[in-house]
Image 1 (cartoon, helix red, strand yellow):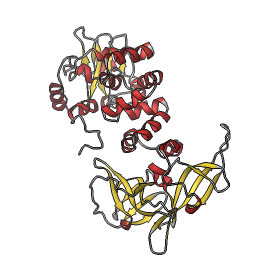
Image 2 (spheres, rainbow, N blue to C red):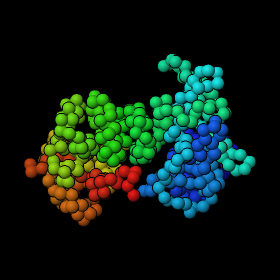
Image 3 (tube, rainbow, N blue to C red):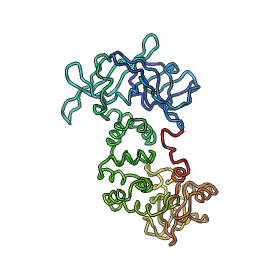
Image 4 (cartoon, helix red, strand yellow):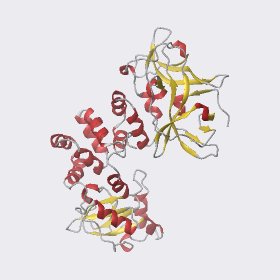
Amino acid sequence: MTTATRVYVARLAGIAVFDPNGDQVGRVRDVLARARTDGQPCRVIGIIAEIPAVRRIFIPMGRVTAMDADAVVLSTGTISLRRFEKRPGELLVLEELLDRRVDLPDGKYGTVVDIGMERERTGDWMLARVAVREHTGRLTRRGHIQQLGWTDVPDLIGGVPEEQGTASLLATMDNMRAADVANVLQDLDETRRFAVAAAFNDERLADVLQELPEHDQVEILTALDKERAADVLEEMDPDDAADLLHELPRSDQAELLDLMEPDEAHPVRQLLRYLPGTAGSLMTSEPIVLTPDATVAEALARIREPQLPPAVAAQVFVCRSPMQTPTGKYLGVAHFQSLLREPPAELVGGIVDNDIDPLSPDITTPEITRRMATYNLVAMPVVDDAGRLVGAVTVDDLLDHLLPQDWRDRGHD
């Protein structure tokens, strides 16, 4: 692998960072430069990498031996895991420059879509090129992209937040997991965070909200108009929507629930009735439910649905009709390993496992933890006094409540 002499920063976002042995240590999230206000090119001092469980760290450019659009390779596997904090006079290229409105040499204006950094003979990397999309004034026509020298855009640094859009930054997040996007949002200033969150479609914003700390969830949701907030809540998993609504005043809860579609609001209302810290408050009300006369082939088709979380797709719950929670009588569970061992035409009613007692809605978190750990399960059914399945507690939801309340917070160590 050879190092390119010019690299565009937006294309680095999300690519893997490898140590000399070829082991991945993280992914690029931004590039850090030394800011200058005299219009001259800024020197790049390092990359900001996202390290699993550590969050963002700083890696000096002197540690980078190779870099292109596919990977960044370091000269050493020894790096500081200290959490990155920006210092005065430093510039985060993607966060602060992308989507900024600038004046063009011909008197028109445009929006920054990328920044090119070039390697000099001394080995230093400098911010040298600016890719700007010209503003056309027409909604249906995209302007041409101009490649300008850094000194051709003297107003690039120091603009006000209102002049910074979101389109290019959103493009760098297209292939990122929702949890990684949530981390990026936490690092933005409040104005930029709200603007980027509002620019997501409802489904994407719902996925990202579920990965944010509760206080950030509340701030973003309440910054939306009530109709949009209700639409986003509809896209969230009912248990996550219920957890978020729990953080709002009762008057706001009622208003948002009334704005939601009745079919979407119903399971959320049901979950809000349970006391915090109980199986009822932790469970998802949308597990996979089949009747005993369903075939193994049907069950395998259901668990292959790509939108299902792994813990939910690990088993199907077998119940009498109706199949919507609360269901008819709960009969048992068929784990996916059992399904894989049976002929496709076999009925799931003949392979159910019912020798482990289900959870009751009011059982507490410590007892749920003991039960799931004892039987090595990733999900357990929750059954009411009438013997109906009302939901399932999954291991990811359980971990959410066992970890410290601020575990998603970027400031939490």
